[in-house]
Length: 380
Image (tube, rainbow, N blue to C red):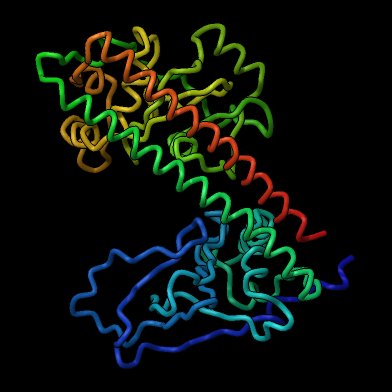
């Protein structure tokens, strides 16, 4: 039933309030992930009076390059009472909260189907942008306020549960970091060995963009490895055909449970401890650590989460335009290894904490799936 669909133009109105006195200095922007981020721009000497004011529960959107990115960066302000934004951002608000809740509208904007429709519309725009006039023609279903409130509360409950589990995982990760650093501080440089003496380092076999398929076995790049490390959902998955994957597996092997993958280009040093799963990954972007001696994979993985490791990476990465981590450089990285007794004791503690982290991560993944189902049902 499309009878309850309304155009955005019926529901929202543009806002153009300027920071005339320059009193507001909290400068923010909207990311491709549909959230507000603090601006890193140096505003010293900048005339802030020309910037737009955005207030709590108002929205900001970027309509540039929509078809290229296949996403509209749009978000509702929640974390600030008031902030300022570049004049380039259209800012809008709900006309009448008795007809549509800002939280409900925000949920609609988060739907992948919304982004796909927007990208299709924007194809004809200049440089793939979407004119405001086209944006407000987009339609969405508007059920009763009571129904909207029910949907919003369900979504909020899931979101809060995700945040709680993520906070618990953050605390557990801090506990692991403390355990590791206490042990590492007891060791000295005489206990150091190069990484390639305790595991093998490799890349994958090349997979081309033409090899991607609509379904099959997941294919991960650095972006997906970073999301998996953080326990975040992969919203735009890539796949390769099962037959191709099987061929690669038989000829060259695939990552196994307990192996480590680490991002080597772009955002460098994000590592992922492989679980019991099947996937393949992009050559050049990711380094594969495998064939560990003993249980050193858990020790090495915990090491890779510390600031000690991050500082070491700064000294071994190459390149000025685009920094990269090479297999050779990582192979020669020195780390202190405890004796077998200390290692066994530490590994036991680490695995107990990591088991709890994995259980929480599994619940978080399930909760994200519930969120996706709830968003998909908005159009029904």
